[in-house]
Length: 212
Image: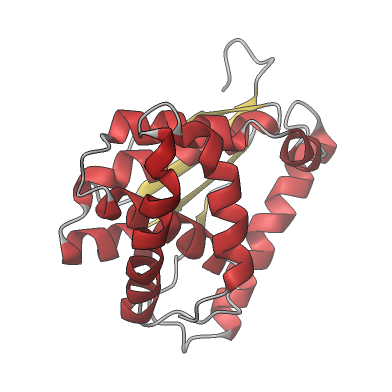
């Protein structure tokens, strides 16, 4: 995958505030400088997925997190990195953008489903992306919300290949944060990163007390 400066600059600018909670403030600039070539190297090692894949942003942004963690020589704990991400994602423009989908409404569920099906359709049309997420839908499994699952996650596979499994919970937790911005609650029982055969996503409106 190609290095795109705009992604690196955007992510590090968002992460900087949270880094003060776990790293000396006078050394954050040096840490980011050390992480940058690591980030580029991670991208160069990711094979089987193209830069124009609609899911590619999940990889490029996750690799920024991994590179900073590696640059710290893994001294930043996963819990600390999760807090850094929580602070980074607590951003009004992102909340407004994600909040345009309200999973408490039928329209919101349809909009979210349309977005996921669009990503799945892209994958079908581009079989050359052999390392892509595979979308599996089951509209009859639940009455409420929207459900899908993957049997392949390129990020989890990459982390396993290179021995970065320790950071996986940080990356998986991002789903819970972003889903919450859509007025949603993510109900998940399995992750490939955790050793399961699937990553399941059942997202329901956060006003539902007892989703079915």
